[in-house]
Image (cartoon, rainbow over all chains, first blue to last red; front, side, top):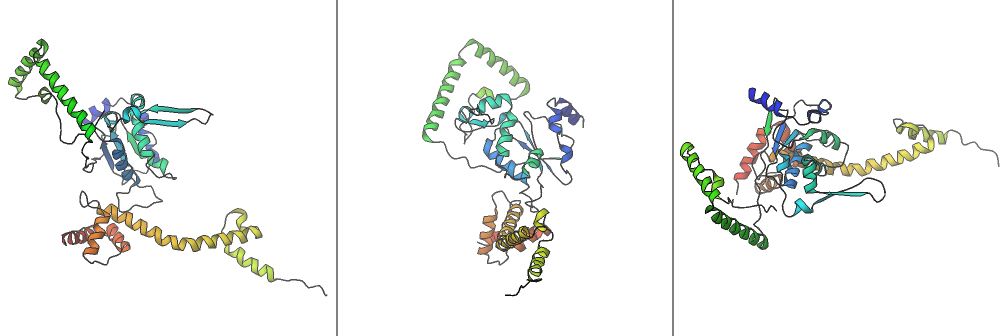
Length: 229
Length: 119
């Protein structure tokens, strides 16, 4: 309880925005699903969120009635995209005035407001009908991992396991080259003064706490890696 | 030729149409020529949608069955369950399956467990 209160007070984001329009939604019987966007690929996460928001994972789905669960998305700033989308994906919109086609890259949008990235992705996956605005109201996205809904019964959503395809040859070669470079730098750095002092301090820590920090082991690579540029 | 009044024949025909369109909105239930057109459109829509109704309900049942079936396992889906149904030669149609999914979920799980085991 104290932890919940502490977490609630830590949420210094836009409280008004987070609670906006909650009264308009008929909240009885709806679950509060929590999605953690950390490390998830943008589109795949958005597809899962859109099915949950439409209520398509319930056998009582009715197309004319809005019955989806409330979705809370955390860690919006840690969303991942594959390929060069961080710099190359452009959001376009037209203001209505002639010649005023505006654009903004993913990188700039993430710097400005990371929640908009996920919101746009999910909204554009929902069917364009009269229920779309109500479904938008059920989506709450937060940049960090704090949110003011800690006193509700929350349910974390397990993303279905994903078959990551193996890297294309050129990308794999680039990754191997990067690995070799990092290892070379590590070895070079090991002989420097600062690195020696770091090693000593780490050894002291290990003797005290019996815990070897994995970052000391250098480049940590997992089996299937998503290519993140 | 003597003058012949048409009498009540046209009026009788038009009251029938007006009765049909009596619940329509605005001038569609008040003005004669508009009501005739709207009755025609209504009947055409009804005819077309009687075929659509069958399609729509089947879509709804499939969506509902899919939603219920996906809760069974990680990569279990509607398509796989239908395949298992056909393999197990079970003749339940989607309407009944959807009703079972809503009303009696455990029954659906029992059925799907049985058909999953059949090779």
